[in-house]
Image 1 (cartoon, helix red, strand yellow):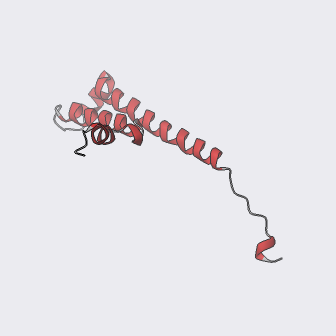
Image 2: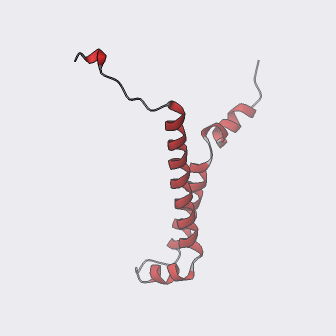
Image 3: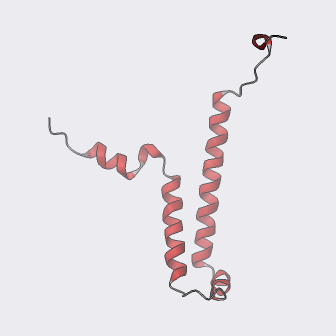
Length: 92
């Protein structure tokens, strides 16, 4: 059999794009939910207290994770940098 006669299995672009989108949103939502639980759950607070780290670290770490997860979920086309650069007046 020659290499050109082998059938090539290529997933359709639509299915691949859909799968990546589902994976992207799943990861973002899981990180967001777990970060919110880390910051706002009393049981997680008690577990964190056993780590010996200062209690101030918990809201800072959890808050930064929440912000990162929200930025992860914002599509690139709608990011703050794009909005700022597209709304700036032109000098022409």
